[in-house]
Image (cartoon, rainbow over the protein chains, first blue to last red):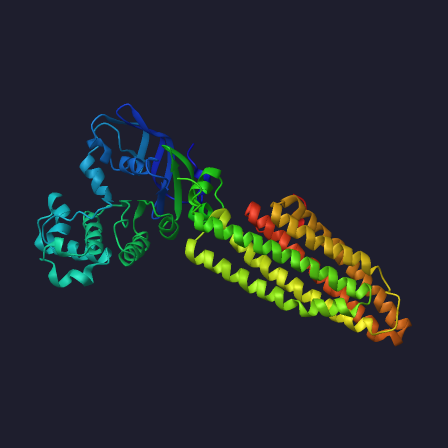
Length: 261
Length: 222
């Protein structure tokens, strides 16, 4: 059942998952997931390891397509378009739905080239326009001031926290509407984590963000809505303050209070 | 739940229950000092308040420590918030017991007189409400908590009745003015104690049902 009732009636929904099942070969990893993701809000997916939260996240931009013998059933629409419909342009989809991973993965190129990479492969050749996109993306990712004087230095020389923000800038450079983040701060120190969390707070004005996190306090701090996954099922999704003060499901309460999981 | 937090929460629970029982006893001793005109009991209650104050500070520090170290959520968070509030209410009840004991001390030095209304009934109800509020906390008993809210109406009615009777006596027996004013105080303190017991009951309802029902008298019944 799609839990429409927890959202204000006039809220725009960007992603609609209904009755989604996912299989890794014979193993079913997601069971009948129905979830709405509202526009320009942060939705956190939480749950113990192996609960299916990352699998679900990767269904949203078809990152799972690359896994042999995997299969999706059910429907996922983004802006009313079925993303698993035959003929869907996956490259276009991933332009619309950017992704940031747990481990920052800059290309062994300059800072500038990292950010310009996406726009270039999508056909942008004008150096002036590329420079604008790079600056704007780095600004949005709150790293411009730290790198503006060394845009042509190798990105591998940045700190872990800076690399992660560079990867966010790289994701933003192709103009996505949606950002998927898979544990974006779990490999960072507390200060860099705080910068990423602040950044998420700023980005939510313009982007729809779905974040997978093991850190429940992080989910509480950064998200507007929290969905709790357990053993491949969606147990509960609700406004984050509600989940962390008075969840409806006992399993959610047991998990967030550390009684299991 | 992390073992350390579980351990600290169990310790906190034991402390708030111990404080509840101590305060309950203070109210009982203070009212006895009035009814039996017993200055020794009255003095014991007055002197013992320091102990309640120390308990309050210790419990508050424990709550702050748990919040800072473990960032509890859901039922654990509601428990800490409820304990913080109940802690203040218990400390206030302790202060009111001292106030009653001070009236007791004064009245013990006066000539024997007839208390012009059913003070023992008020005392019994106030004590029952305090005892039950602690029971409701211990057993997470929402039903009992709702009963306590309802009992507060009875207490308010008794308080109004006492007020009317004392007013009448002040007119007919003006010589008793000092004594009567002190008796009036005792009644008012008992009524305040009942209010604090009601607050505790409401915090128990919040703890269990996560529902804030203060300022909603229509929710007396579940």
